[in-house]
Image 1 (tube, helix red, strand yellow):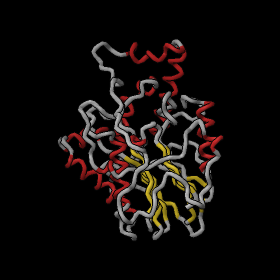
Image 2 (cartoon, rainbow, N blue to C red):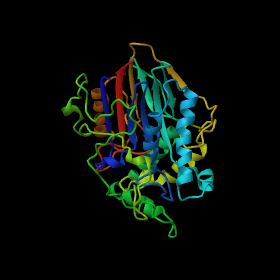
Image 3 (cartoon, one colour):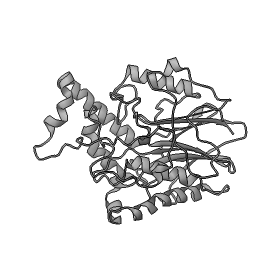
Length: 353
């Protein structure tokens, strides 16, 4: 291991939907999908739940598990959680935005391969494998269009555009409460087979230049074992599904929910995501890893991935300075908002195979 880092965008690290896990045979980065739920079935959020369940599942994989065995083990772990929920299973069949969803990249030392389950990222010896989804490109363009149009519509007053365009009977989906449930932000992963999951570097690690990443935040982490079971909270409390400071994202939220109709479908807008309903024959990108290769696994919280953590953080800080709304250079479905360290949770893991 050279360096590892995992940090949620929110100050409350119990809401971090990213995680990483390292065992004797596997290294993985898991990225829980930001919830678009309208029923709010999962606490504190579907992304936190999905991340915890898949981190736990990787820790139980047999050393010789194949790509397909890994896929089905992780996917069944999410499907099993639906039976434990209070909702009828038909909800998860008919309303895919209510499902637990996560992406992952998993390295297998036994098979000398990395498996890209969704849009998590990998770089081998400085060469990155593209993982951006077509539907994300499309909706990033739509959000950019909306943000630029609202800027023309009145500058600072554009923040009220969604309210002005909403019909009188249409509810405001941004009126939700952020969970105040928190702890120290540093937690221990389950499973005796897990060698290490740390919020700091090992003695051999390279520490990022703090002056270059100060706008993004300090080095803390990580994944939690508490998220492998539902956290009960009062009704109506949980992670907000829209950002009140990002009106352009609020405008595209119906399309973000509609996007889930294409989950695990083979079409122009189709994409893979762990949600309990994956296709066991869905094409999964496999990257060969040779002994001695330097490997980076990361979530999409690093939109401009670089060979080191310091460089990746520096690019993230530059984006925040030059294009904070993420509507010009890197057109995303969400941008940097006040009170958050970054536009997304982020995880970075670098090692030599």
